[in-house]
Length: 401
Image (cartoon, one colour):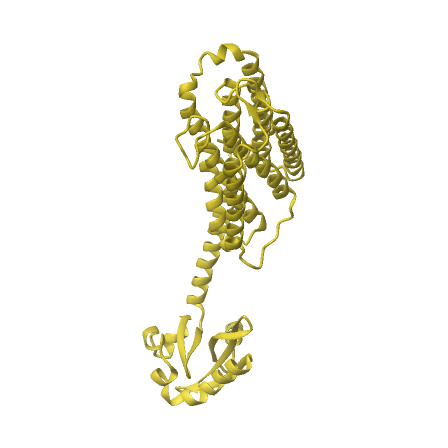
């Protein structure tokens, strides 16, 4: 499939969806003869299972990536599909003809789980689309998971406990009630709003992923319209509604899920490339970059990199995890007072020391976490009397003479 959808492809698929919708309704009687009610439960499970897998895939991916993206929209999308996925599971398990689950399966329970899932889905999708994107400073994933779990438990309890007291939504053999139709038309209207918003975003940025999202909501809108006209939970209209929902979820996965993975992969590749380049730069740097951690009263060294280490006659193993007293005892007292000053006073310090007849500058930078110094970043550079550029200048002048 194309990475980005074109306008022409979008229009062709929208027209095809509407024409298929009309043809199924036009040849309703003939097609119904091919749908065996006894086998429809298996078909229903397959169609619902697809959308359930999509829902939990988006949730799991959103949960995982929020740790480094801190994206508010990613969080909203993840828990939206977590809630919808759970409700769709309950709808599937309570569908008429399914085995006993908490109570006997029934049309009432399955339909109430359906309309609840679709209402949450349509409302939240509009909010996700219109909400501004920004990064959250806190990690509310566990709070959101607990809140969604409590909400779903309440919904589940009310539907299972008060099934007989809830208003009728479907009368088997007669069709949907006025309440059911009002809910479905409301959901359809919200899907229409989502289509308009997605097309507006496409108009603004010409990003074909927005056309996938608009196409997804087109199929979901048609699905909801079908669920206002079916006569039986086993008829061809019910099948069409579930089929359009599954197709809609495929395009949701293509528009939201796959595009997010692609963007994150590019971002990851970019970060890895930058980090690789940074490591190469550190290793080729003529100096020493190191870190200091404090354990009790001792400062433990960890070499990050640099080419000056060999000139000083040390190896990384001689320094890493060691104190100054371990590898440079004659200078330890004089240097560690600067360490202590930088750590206690949160000061940036630059000082000079002499080792083996050469002078070196050492800079110390405290690293803070929650307002406290947790380590010190340090650098060592050699000091020479004149720069290499001066030497090059002298050589150039001498050559000219």
